[in-house]
Length: 423
Image (tube, rainbow, N blue to C red):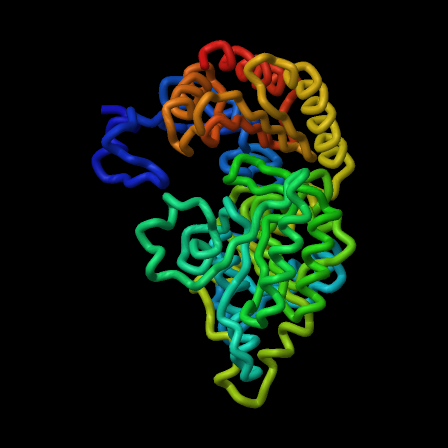
């Protein structure tokens, strides 16, 4: 019995209705933008394995950094101790983060990075005797699967079973082109109530919603409104961080910087689960007190794991090389060329590009569900043709490793064109 068949006996996969899916390909090897399954079939990883592998698979620089750390200090508790790699990583992050970010809190995945930010926003006000118990978020947002992150997410079937148990979140429209004024007015009306501790958003791109994009200018306005009304702003950069949008962070496009930022995914180059929530000094000082009860009582066994910190340091160093920065621009230009070619296709409704992110929306007569018939047909077609893409309903997106070869990218584009003929 092969790995694919053996997998079904014990493994419960994420976002999967096991009764209705076929056997999964069992991946046994990866190199650069390619993966191979147990039967030797080759796949182009056109979404960087859920947006985490900017430098490709089995990257030697990453592997060497991790090996060196594993044979020096693999882990030490961060409660009551520190270590050199956490110090070095915090210093490196200070060089690349917006200048208002001064404090680093380590956790283990994107959902918990968001969870920490929401808890901090609520407790900051609690510590000061202020009652602010609600959060503002975009419609169709996705911030993760833990309870606070889930509450802030707007994709209903992810949260429907738990809605009676969630933090109160009020949603505002995504400020896409033509919708900006409605979003601004809705936010202005909400913040005047003094009930909201924070506004959380995916800056410029809503990933799980189908790479929905909006402008930096309108986000600057929304942040300004929050600043004027003492509502904290939280930039969920779990997807957008570390080069995806063409800048190191999507927040780098903004004049007004968020009070908190959530980082994960590409933080460690796709090697070790790790996450970070960053804060302004003002927020940290809301917990700095003689009263122990005002501390942030949140932690993880593997908080600031040294091996993860070493991986993050290597990942940031790679990102800053001229070669990778040029690769990001090369992928961007290839996306723009493909956009020009495909945008007038009779089955294409819209296209959009930002950095290494490309998305197109397929015309449909009815609204396609997230995991509906069209999505499944497209997904299966891509896998059969050796390309890993995960459509969101009728939206197909590409978010490849920065090191993807041009011929591989052209195969991805051609496979998408071929897929349009079957829908």
